[in-house]
Amino acid sequence: MRLPTGVRARLTLLLGVLFIASGAVLLTITYLLVANARQRFLFRTHQSGAGPMPVPTELDDVTRRMTEEAQRMRAADLQEMFSWSLVALAIMAVLTVLLSWVLAGRILRPLRTMITSIQRISARNVHDRLAATGPRDELRDLSDTVDGLLQRLETALDAHKRFVANAAHELRTPLTVEHALIEEMLTDRTATLPQYRALFERLLDLRRQQAAMLESLLTLAGSERCLDHREHVDLAAITERTLTAYRSAARSAGVRLDTSIDPAWTTGDPALVERLVANLVDNAVGYNVPGGKIKITTGVRTGSAVLRVENTGADIPPDRVADLFEPFQRLDRTAGREGHHGLGLSIVRAIAAAHDATVEADPRPGGGLVMTATFGISAGAARLEPAAPAH
Image (cartoon, rainbow, N blue to C red; front, top):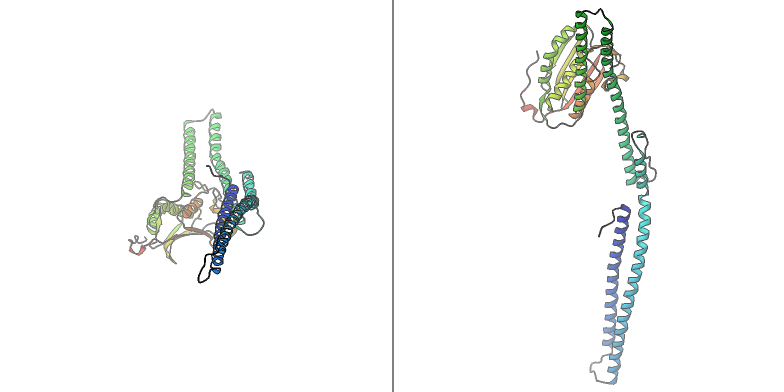
């Protein structure tokens, strides 16, 4: 026998079965109590007519016949009571099933309304909400939970749309430049070999920029996934290794590097953590000013492994700092910066989120930024080997 699959039918069946079972138990108890009570009454009646010296008389025959008749009437009464009780139980069971069906429908009506509303929601009208009213119960909590989920989904879809639009724009720009350069060279019938060589070098540079952007996009997409494995990572060692690659770039830009590197052990993916540090340092070098400076510190602060990168640069309004973490949101400070596509801090935020870390940006008095990445400290960090001293 296949059980009903609908919640309303199952709830009705459950209530009906519970009522029938409870009624059957109550009927059995009542039947036994009545039967025992009548049996005790007949026994006491028979005993009360007995003398100390019974003498067989015609009265004994009368008493015996009365007892037998009483027992027969008792059995008939019990049978009649049992039959009518079964009829009453059957009638009440039917009424219970009908009332349970109606009651289950009323209870599940808000849920059915929510299902209908959710089925109407798509990517085009994800802004719609259930907005359930009524008493604060489990169904109301479910509705509020679904509304919260839709809100997060709407935010994610809007961010995805902006990301796709910005990515398409960023990828289209170098393609437009390439097309213009090639078209200009084709229409110039007096172009010389050095001019063609300069064109090819320019095209190659554009291709490098596109490859760097695609690599950044792939890194951003991969950083948002959960970590498959974690290792002990020292922010100090990674920072020292990263600074080795950026010291020449800082000197070329006329930027002074000041460091205060102390061991700061955490757990995570070493490659992703190194990319986070590299992006912060690259951001500090690339968006600095001639004669500016960068101060980088690592260490343990209030039970956390902390990396702090402070750099001089252009003034950034406090209300625009959060926009720097959005993809391709470069603000005015990055205008004309080659090799920077506005993805560096987005990648930093994604990597930090994957490591259950936080990254904060604060405007620096006088211009520039103060970036602070805070990681959970590694268990047993005191037993781990300290990093090499700062240079």
